[in-house]
Length: 187
Image (cartoon, rainbow, N blue to C red; front, side, top):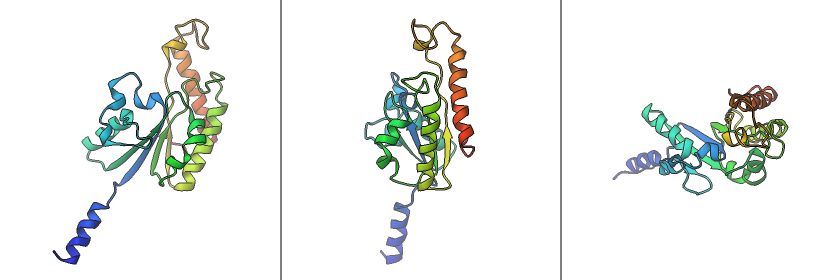
């Protein structure tokens, strides 16, 4: 074997995917209570080493079917918002300059103040700023969560006795406020 052959083999072994994507979120990202949570966990990199596949693994499967070259990562924590990831996971999130990041906050916008978007807006700005320091060209996608039946159909909850779409519209409005603070966020 020649030196040129060895160099060529090693260069192919070290080649990474064309695009790196990181998902930051909670149980909405990994599908708590469903088989999706561990779906194809070997196809993605769980930065917390919990063996989670979830939506990121579904995304990875779609990219493979479309013959796209993506390295897919996730950093998730149940019942958390972006403030948790900012306070506890920046060392993990900051391991590389991501090409794309898909993230979301808590399902009620703020776990202590349901329907108050202030924390989501603040933490979205902080996380986006952190990610842009790693890679000024990073594309950040902020995805809104959806209505939760337990907060609508059970008594004494913030959205009790309202139409289910009310919570969806309130949450979407909060994400729109975060989008207004950072026009570079991808819709």
